[in-house]
Length: 545
Ligand code: AMP
Image (tube, rainbow, N blue to C red; front, side, top):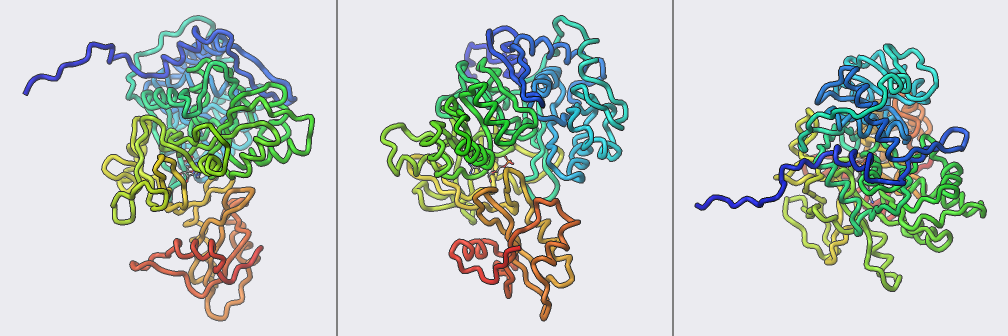
């Protein structure tokens, strides 16, 4: 056999966030980062100023004893300081661990201890939430509070601005970072059991960031003003902060002000061209803008929406009434997250065009996608046959952090748990979900956990929870329950039973009292049958709470 002839290119040049950081410092002339403040004003910094603070922060991390590979948690909203951490932590060789502030206390405790976070950087507005949990964290040595507010009862608390001040100006000598080194960690609760850690590498984030600059994807460019509403603790805010930094685009961050009114005012004043968020927030914004003629959203010529299915009418209403174009994306924490994007060829905007806009779209370049049926056989792309989506590519997870889960992977392909059909043009359309979780307003509800809590009620013999489509929340849990013979337990009593056991927003608003839960051949609850009955309108015994 002859020796392989290597290309003569700089193939050792690492794809790392240090490249993006260097661009923020010197290539993004004129670009700014804008953060919304509590009084409605904004704080502005140029990319160069942000880069200077990133250097200071890197020096602070070194002084705090953060070493390569250490996990550093953030408990923060979308603001400039969080952006600084997005760069300083991974560029120093440590791992940025964005904690989802919306998880339950037990889940947060589990995640921090599982990741073995060494330090946590927290927004002052979130100190009250974190200080209650701090005693349950076993590895956290210090807390750094961002903003001028109270440090509460957090032990070993330091102040971010004091540390940056003391660190002084000047370049920081960043260590060599390998492109395969871990850069960021984000736990997903969209699985059964404990949340699972998705550990992004410098390479995967670098390539995904380049992906956000592709025209058939988010199409982010230097001309954009990017409003990242999707939280920075959820899959790196869909890669928008890194993409904006790579492109040299302006980045607008709403901090914790995610209501329709502050967002509408921010959009009217700051004129973003691109915005990313879940359908629930877009729907709120539409209602608000319809009722307030002074609101002007028309700068948003390229909004990205995903996280759950985007209603066609929502996109049409925005386009017709507010000149806002919303494009749908699909992905998951494990896919960095953007994997498909729906941008049908522009032409006549007839029904066929809108049919495609309402689909989840075509896989991005570098993302390979296939559909697989229950027997493991590949399903054809005919627009009708359905199967589970499996994906592979350079920004797709290959495993979970310290948690082997072989079932989730199929010979190098990630099993997504989403069921879809793909048409001959390659447009994916999600039809169902195989995983046992419900997505309500962008956050996960575990149907298994709800079932267990329901079955702990003495009158409940069987319980199977399925997702019910909901206009506002995308999905809500519907609990199918079999009661013990003669028991007259009501829906209200079951909700009372759940009240102390699950988060308030998990509480179901509908039950179906059924004779029996259908079972598969191996005796498992067959939720496919229940979902089918729900869709056909033949699910009996339904009671609203
Ligand atoms: P997460 O990991 O929390 O971002 O959730 C990912 C999951 O959200 C996917 O596996 C889907 O079930 C769902 N999802 C994301 N985007 C869409 C979309 N455009 N349409 C339907 N479901 C979506």
